[in-house]
Length: 165
Image (cartoon, rainbow, N blue to C red; front, side, top):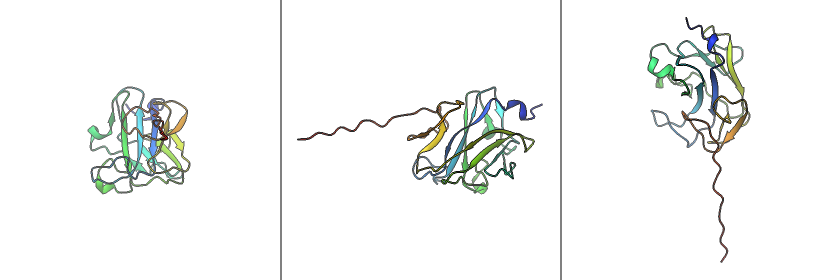
């Protein structure tokens, strides 16, 4: 039986974008905050797991059990959830937004109490995500080019060339 707790070492909050003004949009063409979960283990259905931005309410938003195609992550896979406080837009939309001023986010097991992973974000600028330096790595950094539903990698901006005539 999947109690959610035995998978703690395999599921990670991998990347967060709390001020999405022009990176990518949801099915309603709206630029929304998002959280990406990475699965470093075997196939995993997150139905019944929770996400929260409130340490006093760890069971704030539950992954739905009505759409396994949406909540299942393959090994080495990524799952992005829109944090727009608009659950009417679909099962991949949470009931909270992420503050660009910074806050702590929690991935919680099916018991609603066991924290699988958490991250405290600081102040975020528009369209710059905060993520693990590589999928499931311990260190975090800012990404000029967010990588939703793709492996985290850092891309540097090309050097500007100035010609003086």
